[in-house]
Length: 297
Image 1 (tube, rainbow, N blue to C red):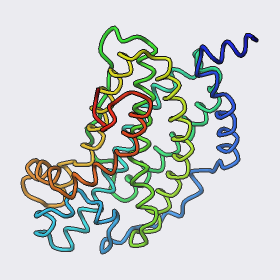
Image 2 (cartoon, rainbow, N blue to C red):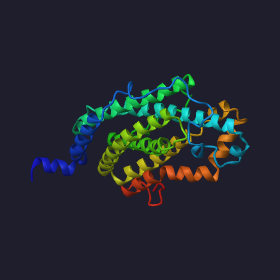
Image 3 (tube, rainbow, N blue to C red):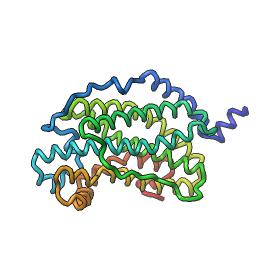
Image 4 (tube, helix red, strand yellow):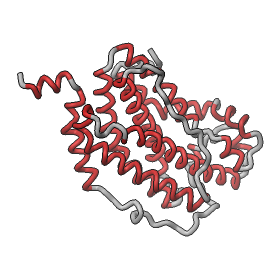
């Protein structure tokens, strides 16, 4: 048995080299100039939805039915701004942590891909922020959350939690990207940004799943369960950021905090939130982080 074979068996990360190289090659072949790829209109029409109304956090609730069509459209405009603002804040936090690891020995086999990942995420943050600056005058205030692991968490588990959070953000937000990109009721610039993000995130998700599974393989049973509990809480947090009371306030809806609680518990949104996380929960269950019903073990 060669040293290389022994190392591959003892270090699951070493098996990711070919996948990382292949995805990096695709990334570089598809590289675009984010500052030139979009045709930015001078203004966007306010008589159209900017966010698919069926995906609005208020859709299907009693509150939605009380809103006139102009307020409904304003609400979807603000929900898109919130969606892009949250994307910037969550990605910024995660990219900083990934950047701190790309030159560590244990990630040497995949460091080229991680550099490409960071470059693309920086482009994503720019295009989301540019949209918000052009058409809203800035980003919306969001509930930024630093998911700090408990003290004395082993370094390998800290890495597991980080790349689990990366995967959660990618899969939850990409669910929306696919649907917004395909909705021809929305302005073309909105659809274009979501198309670009979906294309890049599909590659990121393919890698993140393999990296996360390798890190989970390294961890012990108790560590995997700890990670599962942490990531379910983080998943709930990410979904919760979509229900921003500032959106309801700025849309002119009274009692925004009460509205948030009401719509979040509506049957329509409970169903959508379950759809958002089904794929990720099934994956976590398949590698032993959570129970087969998608709950912490």
